[in-house]
Amino acid sequence: MVEIDPKRSLQMSRIRSADTKPEILVRRAIHARGFRFRLQRRDLPGRPDIVLPRHRLAIFVHGCFWHQHQGCKLASTPKTRQDYWEPKLAGNVERDARAVGALEAMGWRVQVIWECDTRKPDRLAARLDAIFSKE
Ligand SMILES: [Zn+2]
Image (cartoon, rainbow, N blue to C red; front, side, top):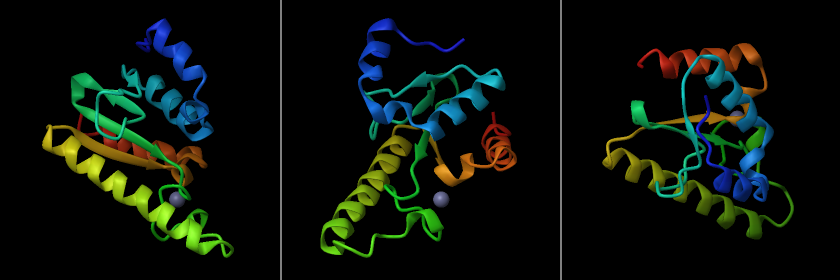
């Protein structure tokens, strides 16, 4: 069901970030719902983690810390080396916002699934219900 070409899949196996646990959980759950998707379309802004071309839907699975999930306890900035972390994390947030804006301008619907959403199966299910009820 999942459309993966062998060359890309080999490339991806070398990129650790492509196989984080939250992403695997989300992929599995979407797959179980019978949706077809592609992984990490490099030609799209921000390289969304999961893309459903037929639905023009791009999904990012974001780590709460790296992408600074607002109000989330997993996102707290380290107390040490704040001069290092703050600009770095702010840069990530800014890049994310730019990617969402660019995708929306291209006519994509963009959804973010946060790492903390994936930690409890019923919470992930509710999140996916909300996303896919429009499909
Ligand atoms: Zn979170």
